[in-house]
Image 1: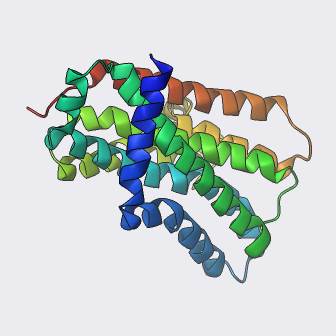
Image 2: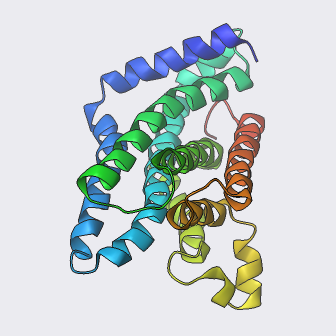
Length: 245
């Protein structure tokens, strides 16, 4: 990976996004709106919002980053831009790294905005540091970016890219412990949930909600999510194709 080429790729992606306000609004505002809607749904039960809201601070960014990144990368390939870029002295790792860096910067803004609104505008009550909440939200957003880059290699159209969401995101959403505690699931489902990164993101958020100090469980959960994001980015670079067949 060449740092200058990676930075140049990230700068190009950010310039493109600057001229696409609808995508920027989807990335930055939709998680905030969804969190506010959830607070309104549980207006008569703030304790429920405290229990669920922290977990969704990581889930909403993951979903939005997955959608936007997968479609944006696929559009680069179907339009021929990716083929022209790879004809230059630009490696696959440079391209994937540039995309990850550009969307990672947006993920940082997104995570800070969503966490800040949830804590100081919507009254989300947690025992731990808000910085830890933002860290997990950021790692989840980066994981969504990595997953989007990876699955875009297997889609032939934007419609197909969206179709990957039920296959990649929904099973994690159902098994991450948000709806039912993972230790109350059938053993087979609990074992499956142990292999899904979103489960560790939810566990990490719950650690911040319940504990005032940094715990070993939180460190483990954060490292697992970060490691999964790096692994999927590496797979995305390995499976990147110049054009859609």
